[in-house]
Structures are given as structure tokens and as C-alpha cells.
Image 1: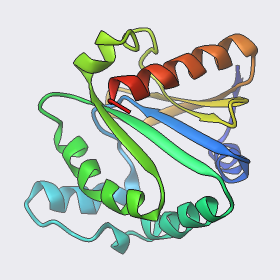
Image 2: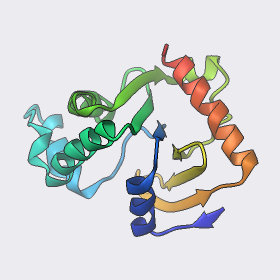
Image 3: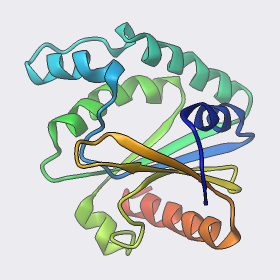
Image 4: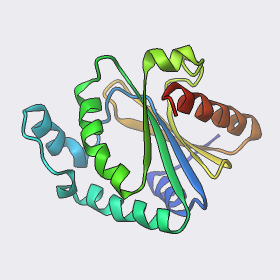
Length: 172
């Protein structure tokens, strides 16, 4: 396991060749560029997420990846009832799907029933090309405090198994 910077994380995300799969397990994420939109959503002022430059830039990137034959898929593990942040991600996720992402949702109970939780740990991660894992660690305030690259076969095999369990939990 190797610690990586945000810039290195971005490089790996831009340069995957065929597939990127993310498991999202946090009840929320403290992302600076989302704060204003999320606060407005919580106050009942539902806005178009494409007003956020970072989000607006992501959508054509996803469409480009799709056109190049690259796939982006994720499973979001949500609470019952979903947190405010999880409700917001369901709202903004429709633009991700329209751009070409595949997004599945599973509850914590569904993830536990298939054996994904607690086995997969408290981390979020991307599995890129079945060959690299980008693992993200979060603090109690939902801030990403560490990023690691994992490439050992044992970690990759676990991530592949967890991906299949996550998709099964989501009914996919």
C-alpha cells in the first residue's frame, strides 16, 4: 500500500483504460465545491448541479470515456432512511447516469446480507482496470484524509469479489 497525493489520484482516474468501479460507503462527503449546492438542497432550494464547474466538467469527461469504450460504474451504500447527502447524490446522480455512468444503490442491510459489510471495511475505493485500487480514508467529518494505491494481488482479488457482492446487493 502506497500513500498518494490528490494529484496522483487524479492521474490514475484520468488514465484508466477500460473500467473504473467505485464503492461508496460514507453517509456523506465534505467536498468544498459541493457545499453551497448541498446546503441549498437541504434548505429546499434544488439547483442544477451543472452550475458547479467541477461537476459540469465531469459530465463531458464521462461521456468521452464512454465514447472511448471506457466504463464507469459505482455502487452507493445508503442508510435507511438515506442521509440528506445521500438524497442529494440520488438527485445529482441522474446527470451522471445521463452522461454514461452506471450507478447502483444498495442499503446497508442489503450489503450485509450478501456479505459485503462489514468485510469491505469503512473505506471507499475505486478499482481501476481490475489492476489498481485507489483507497480513500475519511474522518468523522466526512473529509478524505488519506489516499492509497494498492496493487498487490490479494487486495485486487478482494476488491473484485467485493465489487461483485456490491452489484449483487444492489440487485444488478
